[in-house]
Length: 613
Image (cartoon, rainbow, N blue to C red):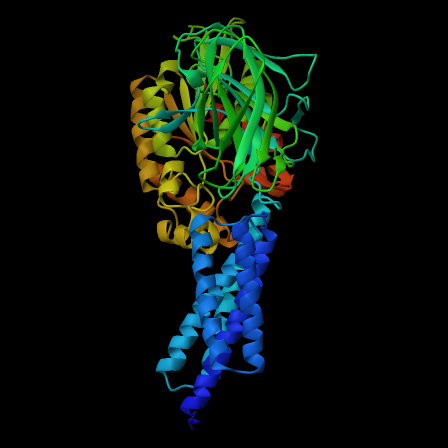
């Protein structure tokens, strides 16, 4: 039996609905502005409007008057405009972004409730409760996902680890490690005592010299803040090919900043100063300035407004356009909006793992090309699991395998040796790895090529960025909703990733390898589930990977090794993580790599991939 509700009563419920919504929205939006309070006039105005809306809505609930209701609607529309303006401008960091999500749900609930109350002859109270219950459920779900995803990456909103290194762009592969360069991953703590620790006065500087140039960085003893860049040889003459970077600065796009430093040169010259992201791609954040130096100390002040929010930026100095040496000192960044000095990220401790790349951008030292006749060479292709992200070079399975092989060559002439070349590149998929072999890896003339697979080899990092995965380089609104990550996962990997292209690439790679007189083997490394929020789905995908690759390679002459059983036999997943403290880095640690090296060694022997010499 339907209950008749008069038009007047329906109108009163609608007014209360809007007033309550205005009350809640004002409370949340005002809180958001207070938490982000930067002493600007704009923020003061926003807070005042939220406070005025709150008071007016409360009075309207206590004693309805038409002029008060009109004022509430006008103020609510103003707040909506402010909210949309801030939503377009920036998404606040976790957990403050949850306030923005709650406000968005409140606006949508109010709008939908109002439309339904005006158009349907249904009890408006039930409509109101139903819509807001759905919104609350969505918010709780989003909060749960956000907390789970956020804790996995970092409890403090920082990515773990932090990468510092240079890439070069490649038309087919997207990016490669800069040849003959160094890079590092930085961690906020050192729970296992595994990472190296830097000198605190030098830890925030990163010095890069492009191959062919010769330059050095000196920390002068008379002042720990003073550095000297000496340039002995310039081949490329490109400014950024000799650069010094100071890393770890959090910047906000709605703030103005001043960079202050003093500098001098051995002779008149120009240097360039820029502000960029540390992580790839190293986008400029709104500062690129030419500075004229003389032999006398001068103070420089450069003001700029970042074009995007960045929690981990760096100030870059470019010296590659002249041979004159340069001294820098007293670098300081001031937030002109609130008058505070900007300090490097407090979570950026001095705990790190260093990577050295050779002439072809592979990890480790250069090896002779062409290959000497007394050498048996194994080439490893893969992604960050093969590279050994978060693990010292001596502890990677490439280094462990080489050590084991050379200890076992008792029956072979003493001058004979085994070499294992590690050409893993973070973010590569199987197609990238085959292309890398064709373009670069074949130059090593390997006798055996091992391609190492993980669950996400169906897509490269470029594919994932194009599909706007939250865990890669998310767009603004994808960052706002973690549920988008799951939607994208199911949309592009439903019900499971499609490994057919990866298998075809392995078969093509096998043809190329055999044509060069070598053998190909495949290894599946599956001890982590990065980028998948639902653990049950993660396990199903791993099983699907080995099933797909096994059946796809059936009938070929490509031997396959699955490391899952060996890795999980005596250790939990967390035991094999590189880092599991303030956030997680689920890459394999040195324990996992020791197991992998042992199993791969046995695999090579059992499959007769090691020819006697």
